[in-house]
Amino acid sequence: MMKYSAPATFALCLLCVSSGLSAANADKDKDKDKEAAMAANEDAFTYSIYIGTNPAAVWSSLIDKEVVSKYYLAPLTSIEPREGGSLSYGDGMITGKILTWEPNAVLRHTFLFAGSGAEETTVEYRLEPAADSDKVTLLTITHTGLEKAPDIRQHISSGWVTILSSLKTLLETGKVIQWK
Image 1 (cartoon, rainbow, N blue to C red):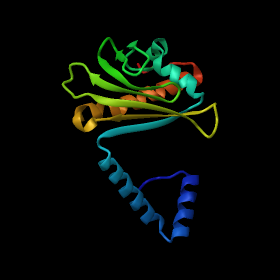
Image 2: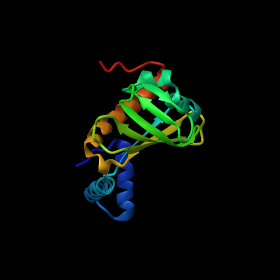
Image 3: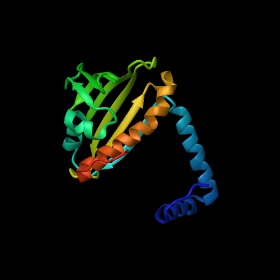
């Protein structure tokens, strides 16, 4: 059974009482919904995180080689900042072509691990001001095309969480997470 915080449990109980469901049935339904969503979306990995700064600062941290090298697992070694431009991480370990370039809003590019034998996938960073505030940004990363690259999925799932946690820490505290 899933565990909820006190406010979440309270909200769930209110929902159950108002709809006539028991908490146990709500847990089962929630688990089924989660399983169905995961099965339906084996093509993609999506992760969202709130970052305590504005979209312009987050955008800059995605495209500035010096900043990227502080939080990303492989440094950004080249970027042509435009649609159709190329980018490279880790001296060609990861390469891609920029598909969408909308400053402070969307960066979408292809993603290919050199020498992996995997097919090319796509990564999208979507930035949105949170709660009508210019002080908080919701950053959502969606990595698609993973049905063609199942070996890549297991690596990127933990990789993206690590990268975005490191980015959040850097932008909010100015410090780098020491992973080693």
